Image 1 (tube, rainbow, N blue to C red):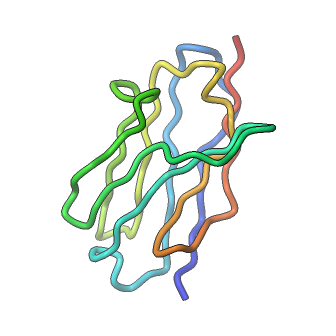
Image 2: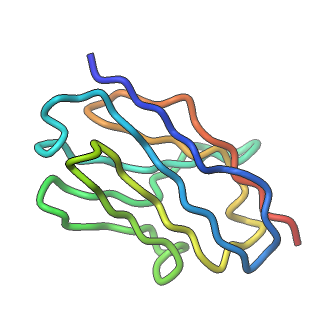
Length: 111
């Protein structure tokens, strides 16, 4: 079974940056699509960004131009570079691969 471990969250001021990482134990990682989701308090979990096995990417409109998803297949890791952070980006960020969720990493953006 694939296991995921997210890291890189923290507290940052508005306008700042963070880079999230998601490391997986999946042996066939290079064949897997990966997604980042987030859930803010009192809100539903939402898709933030997605990267296919070939490297094609998708972003929700609210993060386009600010967030970048990338992958390093040799390290079995997916990254989410988050720039120009806003208070509304505050949420628990989750990595998802093949229907399996990580435990999440908290991102808090202060105004």
